[in-house]
Image (cartoon, rainbow, N blue to C red; front, side, top):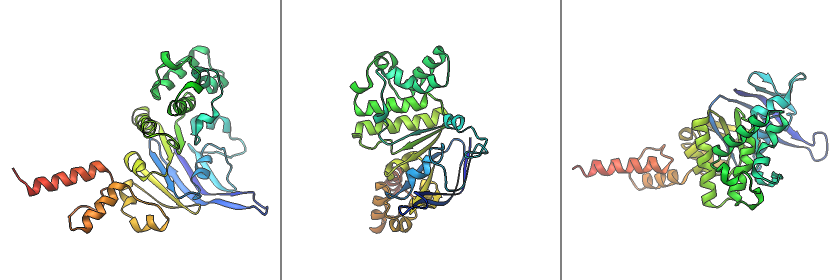
Length: 287
């Protein structure tokens, strides 16, 4: 289910004294099965962009095609499209409201008019996806859980709608390292095994370097670059000019190169750097 944006612009409070253009002339195509990371400084338009992808915001200019269908066309059933494109906001646990975990996850599927059996199966599948044991957690209050567990319940509520595209806006914001790692591992697994297209907004260059297949770099409401993590993180000057960093492994690689160690310029994950240094050591110390 590809997504295509053609010259998409969004201006808040258009025509008023508070008018502000958040994104401008965005052209972007997202193919089935990609893991896209949207990165940029605060205020670059990341969240505004992703809220257009399921019709939550309507562009003031341009066109958005979901699987070839104009999302904002006069005859388009936007409710049907929203069921295919799931959006998880920052701090989604603030939207939990039911008395049990199972009821909260079942809320969306229930509104689809599905049978009780299908709803139950969707709840069980969604809880399995987020690594919450059904027997242990289904009848517990979500408000008795840890912050990371509550967030997983909220994400499960979106997964229970069985979207083709999952959008995550800063999914690890505010979590401790353990909860953060669990969320990211879960998202990585979902993408690898579930065939879901993932679009993730993130400030963490290390996270996107490890997870994403392609990066969309935003600055001042515009897409300034797209490419694989390897391609983007080689453009150190461009990243610095828009006040973005590069992964810690890439910084260490640059320091080692500056000290005369012959390393490729496109190393950006700890594993890549470790493997390259090990190979260099074996060259220098043959058995």
